[in-house]
Length: 314
Image (cartoon, rainbow, N blue to C red; front, side, top):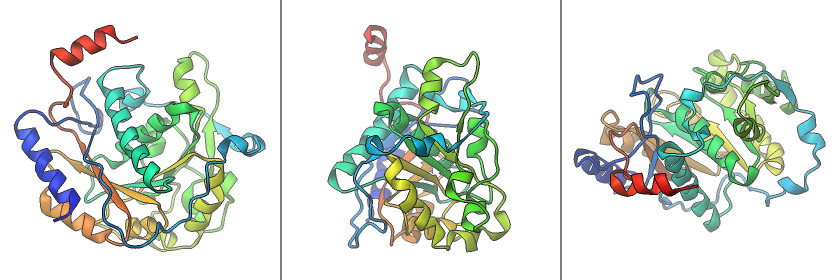
């Protein structure tokens, strides 16, 4: 029995007992105004016989010349803060995303890991929400440099979360119409923006989804995606890739071949065990490290203990 299947069973049992925790996109899913957000549940290493598809270079970000980042085009960003709980200064949303970040970092201690592909079995399970908020929380930790790639070229969403421009993006690079630097963007300085938010966003580089829906399957099968990860890898501490749902199209499987790890997203009360099993099966050749249970009714850290902790924390 797969780790994901077992974890989903445990999560469903906890949800029914009122103990499961998690995340939801408050706009797209019409959730309460201040939901508890994101609990990473049982992010366990799957048994994977083969090596990680892309060799990951040692951490070299600090030693890299700043000229690389100076050459990335700065564009206006107007982030949708209500959809980015990882940008909050404290509270349950931040703690839940920290937990997710910690679990991913623990796996990195076992084996080199830099590029993480986030997918789901079907649409509307929250993979884009998890992708962008995971990237933000990784960027908050020790000012890590994070490359966020919107590889869901059929239904791009990351630019909406960040209030960024859609083009040029990944399809322009994969089709050879633009270089790596030409499809990257970082935020311009914004008057009146919270300095903490600005400092975190400064560490994120976005490659948006562009306009490649008609050719997405062919583009994701191109070797240029592997070349992109290899070329960009030395400049970034993490690469987070938002991919299409794995059960609808072949794109996610193509992309997973070149990613160091895969996180699956399951939505509480929506994702069924058969869907989770099929999603894992489709990615059997990839390094599936676990899943995130999204939109659970109640966070695991609740009640008086968390309230006291919250009141005394600095």
